[in-house]
Length: 284
Image (cartoon, rainbow, N blue to C red; front, side, top):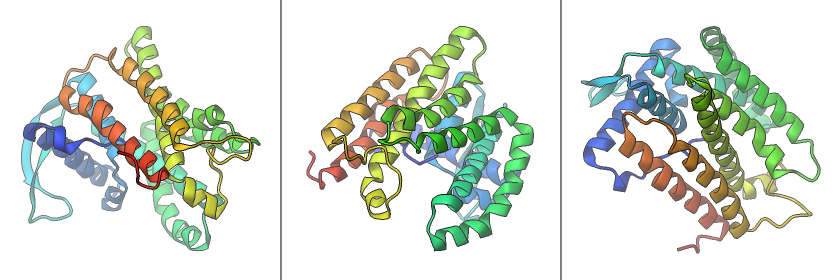
């Protein structure tokens, strides 16, 4: 994942921010427990959102407990308690995602990045196998996504829809796994699809200048299409709006204020920072 699914901290109540941090810390602790303390370095906002959404729809958060930070034992923090496997699913998804990203870096990365990747990959390969044994459906979705992405990047000129489809497909399938009936499955699939599409495209927009310099694939870099910041914003807004429409059909039982904050304020704020950068920092 990419780290774009963030809160808008200034608009959260104090208790909501503390609850968000407690889920983040709870997931961090679970990743170390399930795999290794090193996997905690790969903890992302995206997987925290995933864990919080799972805990919300399953109403599995049973309260909070005081403890000490796993990285800094002198620092006190709170951990959200969970009676289901929401943390374990999010941990597995994080490890699996990092593994496939590292494997992709071996193909597209530069020399020193490839060297570092070769040193790290054997560890994540071991942890990925452990995660895949426990959650084979998640691993299958991630593997399919990588294969589809490789095919999509062969298109010339690049297609926005085809390039974004693999990530959208993966998240759609990931969220649909939580559905208890066909109606919920359609809603979760729709939400995951458009959220995944937005994540891929916001990352592509964020990397435009870097990809131009390194000559890497980017669907917004085309000789035949002009993707200025206004057009990119319109494309991103469409995906985010459709994701929010589907989100409103999900039965959110816990953390509603935090999740609303992310969909309505956090994600748009991230998008504004990216499009502002495309304009040279001149957006209001």
